[in-house]
Image 1 (cartoon, rainbow, N blue to C red):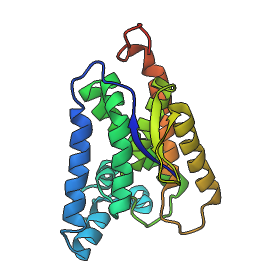
Image 2: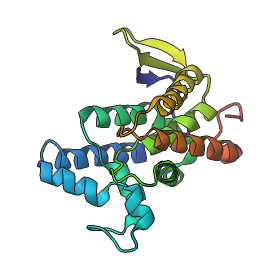
Image 3: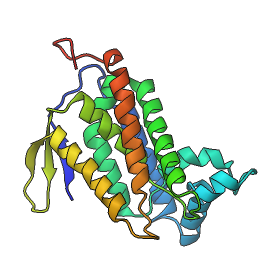
Amino acid sequence: MFLPLHDDTPLRVIRFQFVTMAIIIINILIFLYTGPLGSDYILASAEGNFGLVPNELLHTEASIGNIAEPFTLITYLFLHGGWMHLIGNMLFMWVFADNIEDAYGYVGFAIFFLLCGVVGGLTHVFMMPNSNSPLIGASGAVSGVLAAYLVLYPRARVWVLPLFPVPIPLPAILVLGFWFLLQVYHVAAAKAGEDIAWWAHIGGFAFGLVITMIMRSRLAFTPNGRI
């Protein structure tokens, strides 16, 4: 596995990635409330009420807990089960999402992020319809962001920290292509009862890839007139 640290793609349209930062801050604040600063009861209650439970989404007509089940397709994106879960997702957001926000614009990126999360969640539900375990985490939406970056900036240089503690620069197409293949491998090798939603990653990535390819000609342009 590897961790992305930095990329060399500057912002060209927006001055600052306000939506990206808002998503990161909201996730951190919710994690602090439901995790380190909260109690086990608060965390379990948040997962039960706001996590995405496939069996409940498909078979529950009335709302469970505080909200109607369909809304959990969005609320699950803002819950994380541990520090590493949170840091991993937010680090990928910090490195890659600013340029996708730059391309889509503030409102467009917010919609894109949420739609990737919804499709990622639905993919998980479709593949595991009888699961009673709550799905939490922004991974489905983040996966869509990675796919968009792969489409728009395949030649960008990304500094990553691999297994050894020395950062190395690699082309985005290599970094993100390897990341996607790793998700496919985990789906194939997943054991029954494993609580990581690899299908949500693949669903979000596929949606982000297709939509960005379709929208590419309508997004922000680089100085030479093409992305």
